[in-house]
Length: 455
Ligand SMILES: [Zn+2]
Ligand SMILES: [Zn+2]
Figure 1 (cartoon, helix red, strand yellow):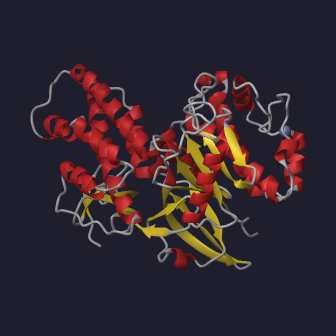
Figure 2 (cartoon, rainbow, N blue to C red):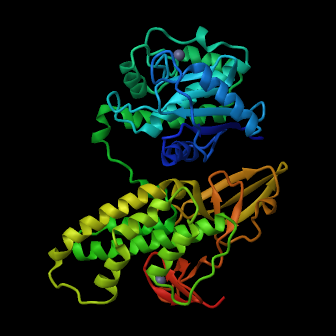
Figure 3 (tube, rainbow, N blue to C red):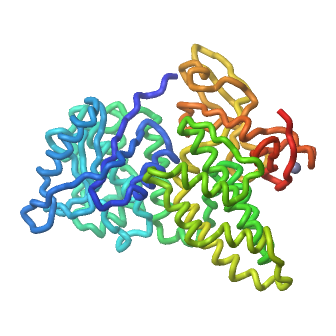
């Protein structure tokens, strides 16, 4: 079965809205990938505030700006444009499609914490889905204004004249039977329904009042193995000293993995120093991020909190305090710092995954790739399977049984070999994911063994 055509949404933001917020929204659609695909524009947009209410945006100005942007960025006729605004708009609406060009819409990125516990990125994703549906219906000749429900019934198409009703809508995060019938008649493909349902499910989960009593699956279970495993070890440890040391390992692992994966994903081949120190990794990352807009906070946080110094003093050199409790405060402070770094890196950890393709089959003209997905902290890696219409070699998959970095949709395979390899650790004699430590030195991500491998 061939994939439905993508619904490409270009995300713009009004000046003043941090790019990291937009990346979080992008990450929601990557986590629940499907036909709706996002692309974030880096440059913020200045919008005039000429609304009939003072200090507000006039709708026509926003529509006009979006039309100019669509032309400047050469958006195709099927592309959608979303403008996230921080300034209030004159009619105080939450999400509006341009009636003359429904594929362009704006959405007010406003603090909704007074109506919902759902994080802003999920509230925005909910609004974007609404606008995407409006666009698709317009293309099918259906005016959404004929469909919206004046009376709130817990459907995505509730009008919600009273903003507090949005909270109710988010707790339902559903589409009513009437609407589904119309969407089906408009030809919405099954994968689109599936993507929307998955996003709505995570919205509901975050919005319901009882969610606080549900066990939260830890976010790291979806991260790439090298950083998921070091995180999991921290979670399992209760002794302060051990926890402190494992946190330092986790920091090392995050910086090391992020630097390597980012360089490879950008098409660069990192050259490693002989026996690189933690300070070397952080410096390399700082250089690599020089000029980049995103992720710079990672280095800033690490430097500000002096993580490298802490590690050198507490672990590398100096003597250890014998009293375990002496470490509980330091462990807590370090954990806080690392949580901030994790929040910054999360979009990257969720965008790219590590895979080992084991088998490629051709059936009815399509290529079926299956293998190991190096995600989560379990060393028995879960399987993955994907079907693509074109030759995997054209996407960069040249060798089976090697570690590749790929996006969630497998559009490109970046070889991580020999920086990352999966083979028997000479120390514990088990197949392990090994991460470079310069030259022929590797670290067994699971056990922490430092070993020598000649390739
Ligand atoms: Zn409905
Ligand atoms: Zn080992």
